[in-house]
Length: 398
Image (cartoon, rainbow, N blue to C red; front, top):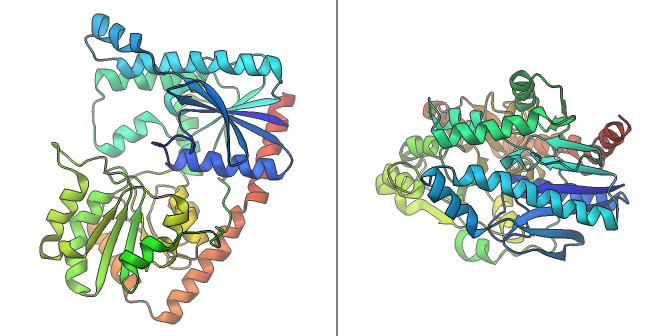
């Protein structure tokens, strides 16, 4: 099958290395290995075609100066994202149509993020994968009432979902919530994961900065949504109890409150122990994997998530993951068997899990790590890609 993926982000773009981008990269490689032909259409600042790790990428220029001008002139500067979302969906559609005319696609997979399926190419069967959902994100951030801009974006995203004939998502949790909000059936297809190949990894950062240290690790977007403020609440008590332990954060800091960065907040909460907190900017997987592999545990207390790549990657490297109940982590982790689950937004519950992990005997630690490796094999790329292609065939047939 020749499959087009339409997305606002992909790993070919320097500023995007999040869960959606990494999911798409693994899916495209899995499809290519199964003799399918994936191609990615991604929002960019320049229109061009390139090859990235064996996958054809169509970069589509969606950044137009007139958007800012129209927004300032008619909307008082309040709806820039709203106009940009509409335009980028239209621009993506035009480019897909052009390429489809030259070399037809069998099916198109859109992401629901930023409503890129708002303008769909109706001559080709399509599916939409649930990546996130604006109202859920707003609730997780604690915004009781949406702003005008948020209302506009939520309506666009909801409209794009409602007009999609085939919806699927990686977690039962989010899929059920989307089905309830839209009244549409949502199929669950887990994200693919494979045991990372470490032979070509770069362990220089680990050796220079972390070798010989016992450390707990958070990696991902450093913000409220991923529960980093909850880590901050209990980090002083944790580091006070375990004098030889460090805490490492890897990722983009998206801020805390009132202009304070999240890492500044974490360091402030750590107090006298802030010297045992290390922060690194987002890292390439080749550099990141050795750091994950040598961590005592991955600490990922999200307020809400959607079958997170961070959890899959850490478990695939044989690491204990501390996740949070009711956020889709429970679909991957069985508490106490192949990882640990704390209550969401509960610093005491997270501290209990951290201490429980730190106090494990070497034998119990190895047992849980081995169980994590066994669990992750259930989401092996070959299995999930087979489910996905069967879903494509069913969607195309209908």
